Image 1 (tube, one colour):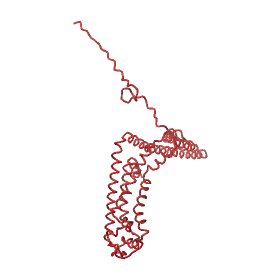
Image 2 (cartoon, helix red, strand yellow):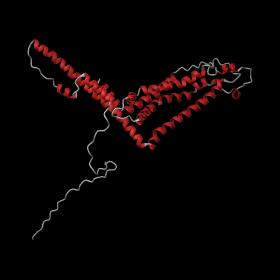
Image 3 (cartoon, helix red, strand yellow):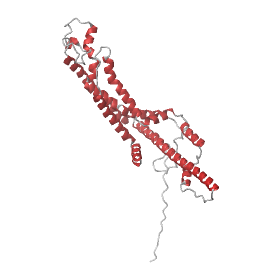
Image 4 (cartoon, rainbow, N blue to C red):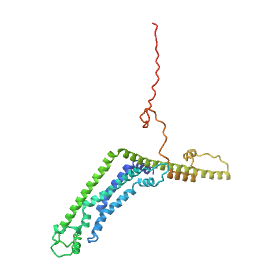
Length: 338
């Protein structure tokens, strides 16, 4: 049990690295899921596009939502967004920074899925096989097929075993044409995601460095404050339970002593320490009131620090810096009569 506790504490202290690892695992899992997925195009004119685009877009959306679900900060963001104003204002820039940080990590697995799907080419081949330019790649004047019959034939391009339109257009030619377009779109998507990640991660702090540092600092503060509050509540609950159990057994012991013999009562060693950790909150109603007060009206972010020594360079703007007085020197002169 101690090993699991140590692992959990390590993951909490290295939450950013842990979340990056989770995103990497999800990206790897998305590629494995696609490789294990049995892609079966229906080869019907009215279903090919829905099936192909569904495989291309629906799993990335699910992976994107799953990335938010696995992120521990999503509940903290929702709590900070929905909490009452109270004595502490809500900074929209901090909320935007938190949301953007979570969205960047959540988009890794969907981007990998879309890239792998486009580079493989099966979805695009299934979705747009009826849009192959027969006039350019095939023989449109071979037979007098109607528009509906031609689409029915072209819809069977992804299914080699049932394709019967070789006189109209060769199956290999159509597949290579669609796969070439799909791979081109895939590499363009990879380039676009790479450039977007570079701009977000590198250039944003250069243009708004002060705002970026402020948002990052207060997002870290909200995360640390919540963790410390949970730890304090856990410690208080443990002390509350300890004192409650001790009082129960003391009452039982008192009843037994009164019924049988009078034995000297000994105060438990940890009773005083546990009582001190309760901080004066010793009943359920007071604890519920304290928790409601924390939710409705968090304390303001103003700690009233002591006055800083003048001349240290931390004086507020508009106030003249007062230099510390120089130490008083006493000079003693000695005269010799020799």
